[in-house]
Image (tube, rainbow, N blue to C red; front, side):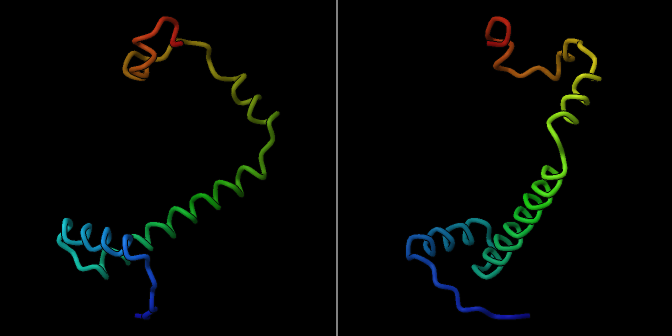
Amino acid sequence: MSTYPLRLADHVMEEAKQAAAEDNVSLNQLLSAFIADGIGHRRAILSLQKRAARSTVDAALSILDRAPDVEPDPVDELAEAKRTPAGL
């Protein structure tokens, strides 16, 4: 396990202490979990960016052209679309 002296703005530290107390975990556990979560999100975004760089608009449109033109199942409709005429 490694250590690193981390400098945080006072208001950020207070928020972190409050969140740790609310979650009944140590400040160290909370910050470690947030950092790990952030790294995971960063990796996911980078992976999606790499995949997007390999794609083309024509390929995406070709896939959409093959999708059937049917109404969505009632459980798949957005609540907002149900309240407004023609989903507008």
